Amino acid sequence: MLVFDMSLETLHIEPILDNIKRTHPSLKSKISEYVDRLVSMIDSYIARHKNLTDDELVFLGEKLEKVIETSYYVYNELRSRTRYPSVLDRAVSKLRWKRIQDKVRSSSRKS
Image (tube, rainbow, N blue to C red):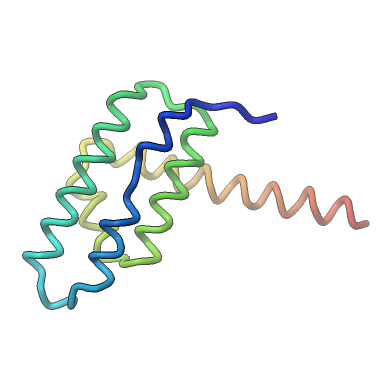
């Protein structure tokens, strides 16, 4: 059973991502405002959780994946502005590794 800090639930980036989706890509200054808000939220989350567990990293990776799916440009801006680019990289990597492991486990059960 996976147990992790429920304060993860406080990372509500979806409304910002919805605003980004509705913003024309040529409006870089508006998108920049949204990126600043994302950076602030994610940096404060990471700062509050100094030693992120694997579950917390996977959760963060899922949020970052939503950013990537919304706009790779926004993700690159977010990564370049954050104080914790290596944590973002680890979170995305941890999520991808977890998915690979889940696929291997599910395919080995079918055999």
